[in-house]
Image (spheres, one colour):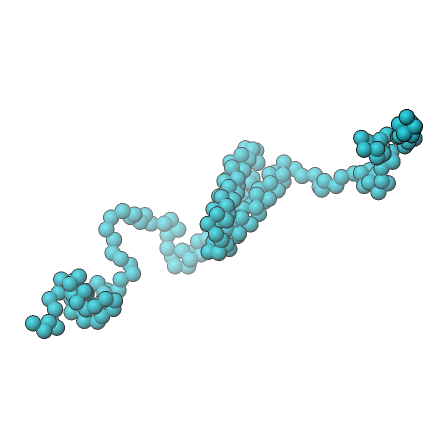
Length: 186
């Protein structure tokens, strides 16, 4: 009975106590350094106007996207397949976030945003120097086209008379081309 009285007295004399018999600190007895730190006003930076907030958000997302793109392409040939899939997913999601942010800009800021970030004048220096029309000519995208990588000598040349061996035997090549062999001992 003496032991229970002692523990009751010791916990009462210490003030508030936790379940393990340790005293709890009250807010008044907190570390004075914490008080000084907490009493300072938070520095939030300069007050931004509506468009400046839009611009700051866009720049932050753009930097995030550029960093994701850099990581993806830097590690493209060195990463294992799972890591590459993760990098590609992060890269794609950052691009989607950027597009969604551009689409979600309020109409009152949209015009100023477009003018500042998407309103670059076309570079027509080459066209002006060479007296070419600025508008691009329509180019056909369907149909049969000549291979631009073949030289005219390659197009005009007949390869039936080739005797140079590359891979395989000359007999394999002649069979493939349907050429009668001139080296037959028969």
